[in-house]
Length: 636
Image 1 (cartoon, rainbow, N blue to C red):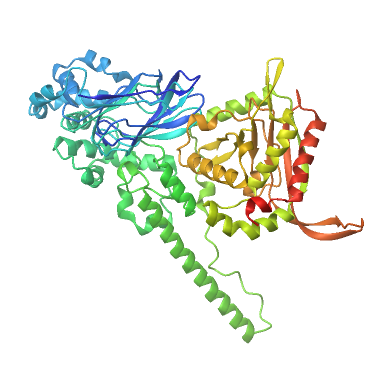
Image 2: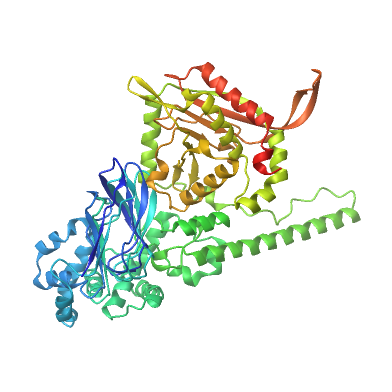
């Protein structure tokens, strides 16, 4: 018996979703809550987890297919009958059967069914048990497009993390799904073997649509072998997995190693495969000359991208790379399909640390030598710069001369930004604020605050707190326009712009006006962490009434941010810098002092907010910040 994975409701007003990427392939074993696929809607991009553990036996909705909420995306079972439907179609040579299974939407499944005709000798060995274990509708557990929010009805499969024949565990990521609000991984609901992918990458389907089928692997291997014999343009790594499945090898802890071994063997014996790998490497701009690759040529030779273009990295790997300052563009993963794994990032970070240490030592030796030479020859000319300087960063030129497809999230951002400028009469007012008192309070309290609250104390919570208090005094900035009416919101739901590798995402602190400084800090840290790790939900992105964007975090003094519709204002916080300013004393005498200064830029909708309203709001924020009376909330 199989379980269906359906397209979930991802929001109140969302009725459909697009499958953007499958994280698991037919035959992969998945665990409960393991990401299966990515789904995209007009509001969110997110991952769909598997509702059960088992084997992905069939994917019903391909990538880039759009389906309604509740549509079956995939089937997950125990794998005992995952290949029955395919083998039956193959033995009979019925193209109609392929059409019924959604072959036009999943080219990979076409290859599986065509190849089964050629491998009928192998299939005859398993036909009887498959027929008994799997009903006509397909055995195994279906992985469906989940509901990623109340208003989200569809999602897009952006990338499959598992291929047909892969063994998956419960909760292991199967695929990536994108909606207009969130990009996320879909975990496998069951453990087993991914036997069939029903929705291809870049296909959009509705919530509830079957994306794949997971079984015990008894039928998934025949699908895989079909792909090999048909000579489809599949990745060498997937071919290796399919050959392993033909031999009946389905041990979860050996799948990746076997796939790499077969992939290397296949690439060594197939000139076409070698040429294709070379072409893919050149097109994707992989760093063949990077120092990391020179130190470990053997593993990287088997890490070619599975489907051309760039290799997939999970949100965890991206986060780890950011923490260790590792450029993913310089890595070619050692995982299945060329995936960059956690170990690859850690090894690259370790190598970089060793290189930096060696460079520092060379610089120190050079400096000592220069000092010694200068002492012995005072009149000598100035020495050349030390040879051990900081290494150049190849990341700046990684994408030069290339073209890439815009992600669904990027397209949504582009559309929303243009719509905002076309909707509102936008202009920006800037004010300068002296936050020296807050800087001193923060320096005094940050260690105790982090120990007590579990999060670091940055400047942003102070700006959010001051803005919330100002919104309560100036409600026109916490409003929205609906037709000919102005709606003044009864709570302050502050949207916080978060920079992610995929683009700008703006989660919301609900009822921020009820929170103190510590509560705001915890909320900001939680939302930012979940946003960058693809754990944000559509509901986290809805309901904002005012937005704050911290461009000063990367050194910008100020900018003119674009309003986040349907809001009427957005506050940009610049970098905190120390400057010499004129400071009057109590008697009115002027003096020059070094102060911590910041620019606050408020973009607002001139349809309902006048310049004087904006200036009064900023003045209220300025007074609150310069007073710096936060001792009570900081425990000082």
